Length: 242
Image (cartoon, one colour):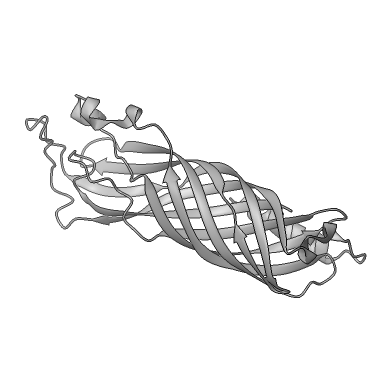
């Protein structure tokens, strides 16, 4: 992730030092314009555990095999990517309304550490269609760039197949899946730069999002039982071309 931050800062310095002013294709003067985006996504969970989460769990499918005591449950950041479409509605000289539907391929990872046993990872694979709606507040243009802040909400739908993660088809309790709900509502905020070229505008952006609702599908198995709620967090680096 450090490489993306360095790239972001280099672009800021580079375009801040350019004396000539590029046109940018005139996108800022259009009442409505379009574009596309590429995204790098880092996903992880905030885990809210039950009060007795450390206690050995017993799977109803195999009560003779308790799981053992837990030392910890945590989430590891997992990388993904997305491609999307941009629709931008000009409200004022310094404010835009943006709709950026995006297809995102991203994994989420939970790690279970048991007493006296090796850690166990459960991966949750998702293919999301994101529908973010945001308000973009822009500074005045300075040469070939302007800074902005953006905030809003995002509705996400998981379109990945459920057949491969159907716990009713899994007979071994140790192979049960941790599944997420199909829809997630999140709030998000970020910042970025509009960089003007002769015929288009490019905008690197960093954004954080946090789910408003519990994303865990509460099924009965040894991996889900200790968890009260899972809240989803995304860190997204985007490049917009308009």
